[in-house]
Structures are given as C-alpha cells and as structure tokens.
Amino acid sequence: MYDKESVIEYCKEEDVKFIRLAFTDIYGEQKNISIMPHELDKAFNYGISIDAFAIKGFNTGIKSDLFLFPNPDTLTLLPWRPLSGKVVRMYCDIKNPDGTLFVNDSRRILKEAIEYASKEGVTFKFGSEIEFYLFKRDEEGEPTLIPYDNAGYMDIAPKDKGENVRREICLTLEEMDLIPEGSHHEEGPGQNEIDYMCSFPLEAADDATTFKGVVRTVAERNGLYASFEPKPLEGRPGSGFHINFSLSKGDVSLNEAGTAGVIKHIKEITAFLNCKDYSYNRLGKMNAPKFISYGEENRTVLVRIPAAKGIYKRSELRSPDSTCNPYIAFALIIYAAMDGVLNNLSLDKTLDANRKENINFEMLPKTLDEAKEIARNSEFINKYLDKETLEYYLK
Image (cartoon, rainbow, N blue to C red):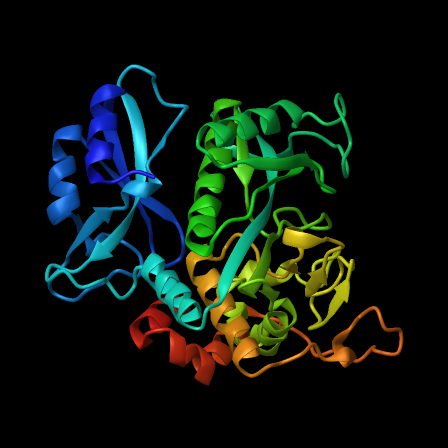
C-alpha cells in the first residue's frame, strides 16, 4: 500500500518520468492524462484539471473544470513502457472545483454502494471472466474480422495460436499485481479467456479496466486486434463479461439472499450490463442467457451456482458483456443483492432451470430500448443513481 509520500519517493528511486492519472467516462472507457514527477505534489493536494466538456457524460454546464485526485494505493508500473524513464499509473477520484465529488464519477458511484453495504456489516467480493477475440490486422495495420486461428474450446498449440499471446498477457498482469488464475482458448475461432483472482469491489472494477487495457496493448504488440465486442462474428459464440460475486456478514454467507435480490432486479439493471444495441445479438445464443433463471453448475442460465467450496463459493451472473462500465455494474449488483439481504429473500424454486418441470421463465429485455425504458421507470434505479447520471447513461 502506498501513500502520497511513498509514491513520490518511489518515482524518484525508480526513475519514473511519467505518471498516468487514469479514470473512466460515464460509459466505462478508460481515459488518462500524463504528468511529470514534479507535478505529483500538486496532484495530491490540489488535483489536476481536465476539460469536462470533452469527456462523454461529464458535461457540467458553462463551467467545465474538473480535477483528478490520484489514489496512491492504486500505483502500478506499466511494464510495457521503457525501463529507462518508467511510466506508472494511478486511478483517480474526480472532484468539482469546490472539492465535492463529481456526481458522474463512476468510481464514486461504486464507493457509495460499498459504503452502503458496509454500514449493514456486509462484505462483497467480485471476480470477472472476460472473453475476447483476437483478430488479424490488414497490411495498413487496421483491424479485420479475420480470426487469429480456427481453434475451439480448450484446444492446444499449434491449432491454438493465441497461446503465446495469453502467456504474455498473464505475465504482464502478474507484473502489475493482478494475479491470473488460468487461461484457455474459448469456443469461437480466435476467442480467448483469462481469469484472475477475485477481490473487493473497487479493486475488482479497477482490475477489470486494467485487464482490458493490458489485453489490447499486448495484442497490438503482436500485430493483432483484441475485440471485446459481445457478438463480433455472426453464427459464432459471443463474448461475455461474466461477473462472479459473493457476500457475507462475518463468517455467514449471504449468497442466496444476495443472488435472489440480483434476480429480482435483473431487468431493471440490464441496460447497465448490456449497453449497446448489438449487445442483444448475443443474448439467447450459444449459452448466453435470455431467460431469468438460475441453476447449479448450469452454464446456460442467467445465474450459475458453480460447484465450489469454501472461499470459492459464489454466484456467476452470465448476461453482462464488455460494453458495461464495471464500476456502475458492480454498484447496481451490490444494491440489488442488499435488497435481497435486507428483505431476507430466498431463491424462487420455480426459477431453477435444473428442475425439469420449470419451463416458463420470464425473459430478459430483448432490445436496448426496452432495457432503457425499464431502467428509466424503475424506482430501484432512480433510488440509487442520480438523475443526471441516469439521463447521461441512457442517452
């Protein structure tokens, strides 16, 4: 863990020449501004100014100044940058000129959800399984939709050409203290998955953002294009952003109540989990769920209850894709799960897809417009998202 003084000392001792101050726009796209080491004291004490007008969802009216304040405990070296004149990165809080937190800072939204759960003594853990395709580039270096290989699920080299790319990604993640657990070729041609350790919600959202950036960077270095699109190839498996979550109060697991809460509110939060029109091309096809159901060890349902024991017991929400902003997605999952906890909900057996007599399940929204309309009129969503944030997000 770093603080202000240790970050400044680290940059001196390690020949750091550039510090990237990172944040995301309202839709989860990572942004950054680079500063030199002599600006660090100013950054920690007064913030670094950015133009809100130029950032999606950050329109603040006539006055456009916002300020980035780096979180020292998120300091990490970017290992693909030069070793002489190193580059590091820190995630930031975003504040208004008067020092108040900016309403559309998605890290703020997640922090408030964590605090809400903490006041009830509930602790959450999140883990992400993010699928992606590797595509070739043309002679001009532009992305194509030609898969890097024609391998299938868990194939090996030489059929699996992505093996060395995944290895480089894993080693890069490890250097950034994001610990990989496993990697393999997925079902689609050129499709891959790398799983990494779960963590507390804010760190997990930072990790998901970091992961996507590392994958894109390593793919580029290998002359490839990494796509996180939910359905880049028609007739081929889509790519999900499967969200694993667990919650507890002391030593007591609250997973069932929390999962019941997420299922209760899933239609209301779908617009924040599947955020583009083309997100809905994936749902209902090739194991991507379209029905609101759950099942133990069942990979075709909305919520899978994996065969796991001890600290690995969790629920896996399988509908999200990488168009989502992980900070807002995790926040809404926390609020939905807490509704399940506070109202002592249990899983509705009629939604258990493993029971053969259960065949009439309600469906997820079929289109983004339908999902947006549900969210806009949701008492639950309007309770936990500021009106301004909601309107920007649903534009």
